[in-house]
Image (cartoon, rainbow, N blue to C red; front, side, top):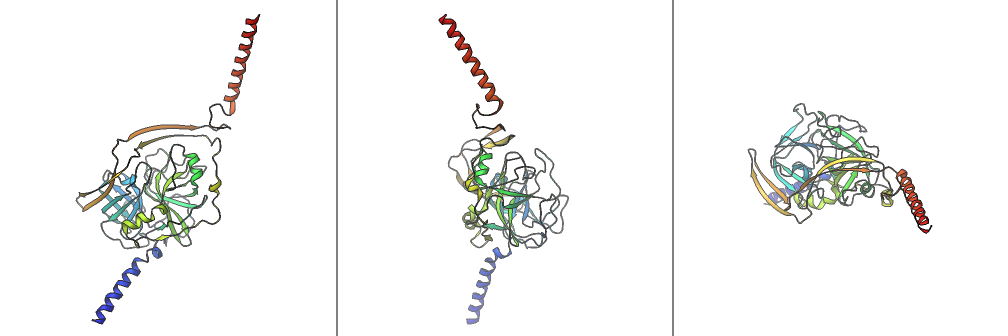
Length: 379
């Protein structure tokens, strides 16, 4: 009896210890041994990167966060009950021995998801996966993490490599981008409200960015010998446009929500602290940002209270539980072309450049004509 109790207690301790080791095994990429920032990613460089194939053939990205859960964006998977998750993939040309393909048993959209807000979701895989050099979980930024302006980060995915392009790459792509503080990011994204639940990244010169097909994929930063996911690819205005950084869902703001849904010790949350003081705290918008013209088509969603519903959809593979958010109003699709002047001066139509000079000439001419008219009347 005593031996039986000892064995039971020992088993419980082993299980608890194994569940508590998520933070120790996450974020390791044994095959990523160099500084990145090119185009094609070598095999195994980003072992948490997954590709999501929806039933209509569309592609999205995601990240493996433990042996049975994937983190992605709600905008990617909303309305798609049938999703195939491929782990360990490097090339789209065909399956390899390093790949594992699984279905999804549960889809959890954030209950407050709407338009660009709270764009985060969880997928429970139909079976647990064994970790290899090509399939491993990423660490997640904990609630007290900070990512200051300029922090080097990387985004990966199989999205299109050219703005307005329709050709998807065969090989997994990797791009090095610096963090852009929320104050500065808001200056450039005038049509959108950048909240504290978002994080921005991109080059001022443009040319490197996530794009269509990368949605839901990870934005990661290196901490010692591990990689920490700070963001989930969410939205942007065009792709790789100068002075228009990409916007990501800030993972650290959703630690409690993730733990609640997958289990307290089922993800490797670690704290990333940028050194020094964030220069973005004192950033103010210039009176005239550099000229940028973009055309963006997006679906506007109402900001009314969302209702959460849970449905079970029977597919050929398995039953999939979908926790969704339903908005009662009908969304509208709007195309907007925005041009920001590069003239020096404020936002007023009378500020800066040749337009002011021409307006001054016109005003002076009017005053002269009025004076002559008054003099003629007195005569």
